[in-house]
Length: 434
Image 1: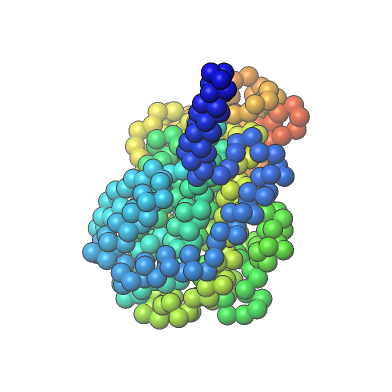
Image 2: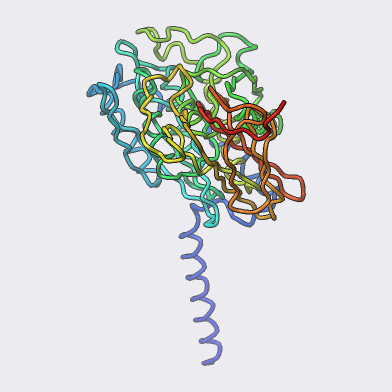
């Protein structure tokens, strides 16, 4: 009799423990040991949680503040609203305060930590919450912020490999100052930003064709993001019905600041023209909520797939630093070119007299070698870390504006690249004769 009682008590105890365990982990839907097939099922579950009402409700709340010109009370209240959303869904949230030119404001950052403690890679998905002075900014860029908040809400219940930063920038309409100061500060802190997905004007579609297209504007260094995203759009085409159009880079969007500081980033925007852009007519009546929900679903899938996959190899230029002037290999001054966002020189590096480049290759495989190039021309290779090279011309002195590029290769054929824009006045060169 005593044995039966002990058995019954033990079973009851185990059931209670099991119930507690299930309750504690019911919100952690994604399991780190999922196979690719199981992970695809998780992605489909994520996509199906996005609906028009979810995204549009966030957009309505943001637009209710009225015009959100940088530095105004409406802009500040919008930042507080975005902060509260990130906080309520359980993200680590912080303000990134900035001052630039005559403006002062703050970006809002929500962080979803990844489960892989060996990875320091950060994936940023972002939008800007400020507007021009007289616009409610429903599409430019309330649509991007609404998608940002909806994606954050869904993903906050999952665990992915790499850290995801959900960032709402201010200062975009006055010179992309919010994103510039953030990218500059992140670079100076040594953040390993793997990719930037910038959503800006994604809520309008007036044609059947436009309702099936989302545009990715990019530089050559960021083209891999477009290829990756296109593969994901094809993978979930039957579920989302949205294609990606690859178009040339546009310098006036928030992703450009990150590109200027040596990171990869794309501007994501609708295909059809923005109705009422930069005017009082940029209101909710011009939003195509069906299209906005489709774009949100696709960006969620792209982000989740990217944040889950292992990064096989990276190469990062460590020195010289972006945006600084060097004299005989000594950093002497920050160049301070933040106002020149359309000149392609905000993160440029000035080299005078003599300069060394060093880079780090990150790979779980052995690195075969690192190749150093100027303007896509092979000049030097190094197979022993630390990977370094005295920057110089090949047949002539290196004078003027150039692109410094590095390539890292593994024995299995994997490759990664990084690059830096430089203005050089370097008299040394590899060969004395043509």
